[in-house]
Length: 102
Image (cartoon, rainbow, N blue to C red):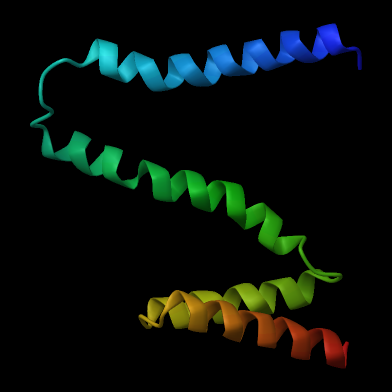
């Protein structure tokens, strides 16, 4: 890729991400009072993070089975309210043990 093409792509990506973030501030000038809209906007970062992370979780190990077991352990312990560090450590241990016996 030439340097000229790189900067063209860079500016296009900058424009797209900039306008996506600026348009809500320009379009909505008053405070949002609708409870449904507030809850919708509250959960957007979590859903985007989950959508970006979930596919990577399934392909992070050498086998899909160990990735699924690690994901299952993480979901169970996070649902039970364990800390993020404990959930990550237990999921890693589950993947390690699964890979060890496969």
